[in-house]
Length: 175
Image (cartoon, rainbow, N blue to C red):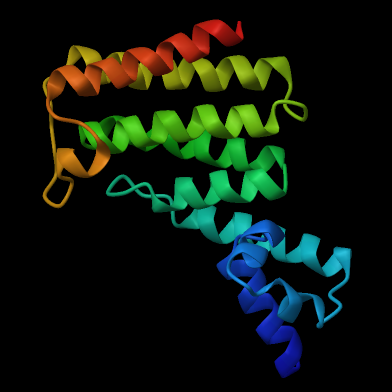
């Protein structure tokens, strides 16, 4: 790859493919000067999805937020399937904050990919998310080091449960 394409790819991936965010940061004109084809951008979106899916972790939710961001710009069923697959296998062993962030992330991804996903996948995603949220409410508050409640607008177990209940309401309202 030549230097210009590499630079364009760095810009594209650093903004998760969002030309709006590139514009907000004053980088859109630079990106446009590279005249990247839509086909190449689609390849980069696919690479981003694969990369972020490999980075999913029970220790944090950064990869889920990136996949949610990518879904804002490029709707792909794989985003939901990958997050759902990871969450259904792993997330119950994480702390309460990570569970909540994954559940909220899944709901956002469902909303952004709703036109593409089948009803069966949407129902499966909501069931998995509901189980995660129910687990948050039923079990004691567990917080790993570095996950301070205040950083996530949560004061205590009650406010954590309130957020989980609001997410459950979002699920119910979509049925």
